[in-house]
Image 1 (tube, one colour):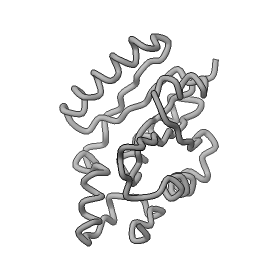
Image 2 (tube, helix red, strand yellow):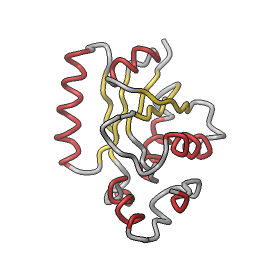
Image 3 (cartoon, one colour):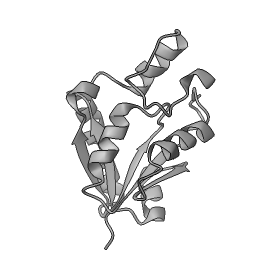
Length: 155
């Protein structure tokens, strides 16, 4: 059986922390599907097309990475993609508490889908998409926090 993981998130924008988790997960999985979740009640800073384009450019030389979008439950998306793993990155203990609850609910809904946590590299611990968006909104420079492919000035 192929080991397929879904790495769900908004990736608004994708950060170097996300990229680090994905690259490290590639040794554990045959395929990593980056699932950009669409939440109609949430206003994104960047379009879905921009986010998909950036992630595709970042991983253009990595055939094990696929980018897709979805609405609804992550476990349903996993079933559609025949993925038995949900990949999550953890920056802090607060992330763990939040993600543990989601992982347990996902397990209750789909006990054949396992949540796998990877710790963020220490240097990326303070970086989150929400902080990046705030820095961008206020005219700050996010180089060194997002991959070069992220054209944050074209928002």
